[in-house]
Length: 555
Image (cartoon, rainbow, N blue to C red; front, side, top):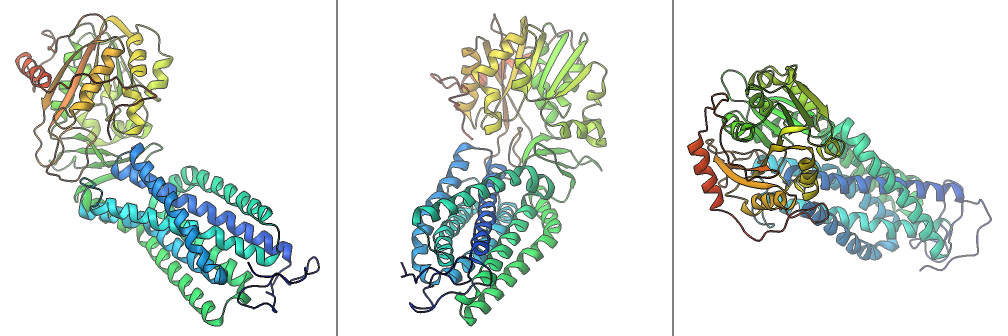
């Protein structure tokens, strides 16, 4: 710590000696001490907000590109926190040049944090999916960005502590309290701005670029404006050039971001991207559906509907459950209207309630010409009532024994947001809502590729009081994953089957077709019996049910 001179008179511009000035010179500020301290704390506030936005951006991008997983979120945050500690230690070497060091750190952080989303998305789009070991491809880049961002964020506080002490020396506890208060309040602002302002209004890429520009401007202005006399002429020139270059890169990227997104989508999904929109819940993308090309629906980058195979999937999902009473039917998920289409083919259906979280998907299913034609305008049928709600919350208020059939057409349980919809508690609510002689069918994912997840669904249904029967159906699409919730990227490990669990309250159900029902093009009773036998041969025994507090599914 540098020796201080006698305290300057209150309100004077003279401050504590800086290390570059030597023991006999004082750092001159262009403003009063109180104003200088306020400006530093305001800079801490803004830098903390930007730093948290970078963290959340990496977490959100990892969830979007790799699957919404607690494991992936934990990896990003733990790497960043570790790197912040290393950055704080490394910043001790910069204390003698705190102003120049802080300016360099903020310029680097603005560039790294601002460009991280675009760089990661580019690598994902042009090199393939995130499969494989952690040491490969985009995963390595994700960890590298987390590490670099954490190192730079960690270096901020020690340098800011040095700078604020140069304005007016105070006890270490008081300085830490002031900086911590500004830092935590700034983190709150950044944490709220990301989901409620940046993400919905600007999107992930533009939001990160704008945050980087704000970070560069504030960091550069603070050093060049307030601590200008603490910099050598050469340091001032270098810092100005660095910030101008950073802003030029971020500005150019912001101008080109729309073209970049279109090119990245073409690289990922092919040239036939027809609809791409961000709803309040997720990114929704449609390809094909015209000129004879099959329609594909992607939700957050996962193939949810394949026009080549959707009939096989939705017939297998709906028709075995409709063998029995089916006057009142509940469809959980299924906002695309395709499961509803199959349900409505059965005579005797008087009411179908659809509970879908994303109203944007429902609007698309009703108004997009290709998708509405594929679902046969099922959602416009007068017997259908669509409710926009979380399925778990909706079932809590549903009347008991209200439905003869419940069809669960929900995202894969390994996606964190969906795990609760495959829990024992959720199935308990569904059992209460199902009529005594009703049937409940659940899409449980790929049997061959994820047998533990699939049979955990079965074990969880049994724990909730259901009697169950499992069956699987093989898809026919080559090159892409056959089932919902798969990556759009071509892979040697494409999953070409769907697993279903048929459940009833009292008697073990048998997967069969209603003999008085409509013609089913892709299934017969014989094929269902064979599919049930094939699924049973993959059974994993001794699995523990999944609950809200102890989810058992992998990502």
